[in-house]
Length: 312
Image 1 (cartoon, rainbow, N blue to C red):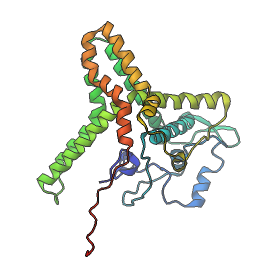
Image 2 (cartoon, one colour):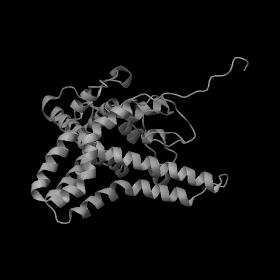
Image 3 (cartoon, one colour):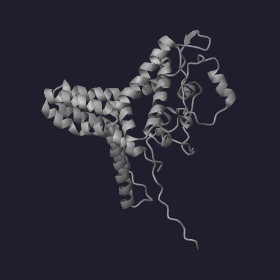
Image 4 (tube, helix red, strand yellow):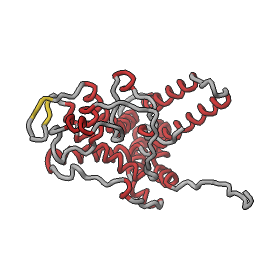
C-alpha cells in the first residue's frame, strides 16, 4: 500500500475513466508530441496558464493508466504542502474562465469554448474543492452561534467529512481478497480506519488555517487577473522551497489563525451558550494544539534498521 494523502499517488481507478472513458492529465504520461501540439496550438493566452495539466488534458484528452508506478518526492513538511496547495488553487482559478461558453485564445480573440461538459465539470470540481475548508468552517461557526440545535450541526459536520472514507472502508471490509486470511484482512481494515481517523482529526485541527490559506489563494488570483495582471506565473518548485522554520514558536506564529479562532469563538460561546461551548470543546482543543501537532508531524521519521553482524 502506498502511504500518503495525495490522490495522485494512489490512483488505481478513476470515476471519469470508468464512466466516461476519459481520464485526467496530471502532468505525467505518454503522448504523441505532434498531436498534442496540434490540440493546444494557439489556444491559451501567454502568461496566463499556471496549472496547465488539467486544461491540456481537456483539449488533448487523456486516459488513466493504473499499472505504471512513478516515484517522486512529496513534501515532508506541512508548510511545504500548503505552499503547493496554494499554487495549485491559484492555477485552478486562473483557468476558471474555461467553464464559460466563450474563451480568449492566444491572439486575445473571443472564441466559442469547445470543451465538453465533462471537462468543464472537472474545472468546476477543482474550484469547489478549494472552497471546502472555508465552507466547512463557516458551517461549524454558524451552527454553533446562530442556528438552533448546535449538536445537530456538529454531527452533520462530522458526517460530511467522514462519510466518504467510511463508505470506502465499508466496501473494503465487504470485499475480502481471496488470497488473504480473515485476520490479515481485518488487520488491513483496522489500519485503514485508524489512518482515516487520524487524517480526520488533523483535518479538523488545521481547518481554520487551510480556510485562510485557500481563501488567500482565491482572492489573490482574482485580484491579479482582474486588476494587476502580474505574477500570474509565480511559482517556487518544491525542490527549491527549502525547509521552513521548524521550532514550535515559529509554527505557532505561522498557524496563529487556528488558536485565535478557538479563543475568539470560545469566548463568544461563553456569553451566547455555555452548553454549546462544552459541546465544541474537543474541536477547540484541536485548534489550540494544531501548531504543536504540525510541529510533531514535521519531525523526520527515523528508520529503524537492524545492522548485519560482521560474519553476515
